[in-house]
Image 1 (cartoon, rainbow, N blue to C red):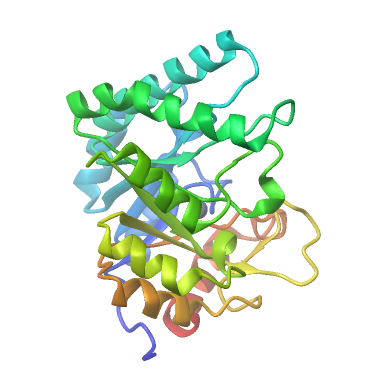
Image 2: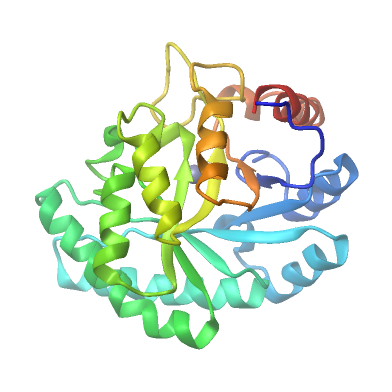
Length: 275
Ligand code: ZN
């Protein structure tokens, strides 16, 4: 793979530079030549998503997606309804923000089987699809690494995400492929091809897997700090027809403690040389 020479497809998730508020993130990303931003819902709390969306668009950044909806499974019906209501709010926020896509961390409840959780995921997505149709919002199912199967997602492989899209069979349901969750999967190349051929491949998230990983959630690496062959996976997604943004999504206690301006410089350097 040839190194990436320009930043036209570089997007950053606001969670990556967690110490920055939305205004600072917009300003710094723009100044650094980044072209896309994925907004996490915490950055919209007590704020007007429409106004923030206008700020983003005025800055020249593309609002790539809203992170995140999902968390549908629950052993109680009341909690499942709460999740559906919350996803409806997320759809309204996404529409106000001016993005076309919500990333779904589908959820799981350790008090029930994974099969039961997957049934709740199917039903939850189906329940909010009429809202998506009204708002023209797409839902991208993000399969999560199996270490999160207890409480974060019962969708753990790209095959499961593709199967779920097949089952829902709706033009507003697709997939977000994140190298952190999928790099280990021996079926990855085939399932990326299938995802592209089915028209489901809508988002591509990048970071790296550190050894040893000292925190299951917040020790993701900057691209090049770990063992994921990101250029190989990028080649597969491009061969599958993906032309969207490369979204840097790094939850890292280590990097959040660093000078965020230096971190942003490191992200851009790593994007050019390690992706
Ligand atoms: Zn992701």
